[in-house]
Amino acid sequence: MTSYTFKNVTSSDLVVVQELADKIWKVVYPPIIGDEQVEYMLEKMYSIESLEDQIGAKGHQIYLLEDGGIAIGFLSFSLHYGDKNDRTRLHKLYLLPDQHGKGLGKMMLNFVLKHSENEGDKGLELNVNKKNPAFDFYLQQGFEVEKAVVLEIGNNYVMDDYVMVRSLNV
Image (cartoon, rainbow, N blue to C red; front, side, top):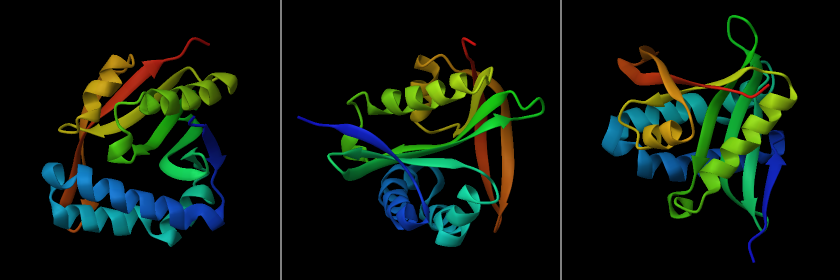
């Protein structure tokens, strides 16, 4: 019997987030953006210093998804985001590849949606790489493409993404 729980991440959990990101990104992203950009982005976004800044100054809420106390994924979001402070911004939603296809991504997304609705936000937004298979998952979950963006992230790398949005029943 599996028992899934969400654990709010504190500074002492950041190494677990870092390890999960390393395992997940090195499987999922090399076919999309290449090994060198994966390494660059892992260092930029998942160093302990960067993660501390995310949960500190930037106010991201990060949660681990655990199965019987073992971390198998993580997510992060910010409430009251955007021009009107009326959206939740989903920054990260990642699962170990061997956990795909079990409905856990949908469970994680619903966790964020519940927080967003409870706080009165009117929508949920995220960026997804245009070639990421997760794009289809988000479409199935009621998201629509708001716009396409190409974001320079340094070292001559870009993120070639869609910004996707979903309205909430508030």
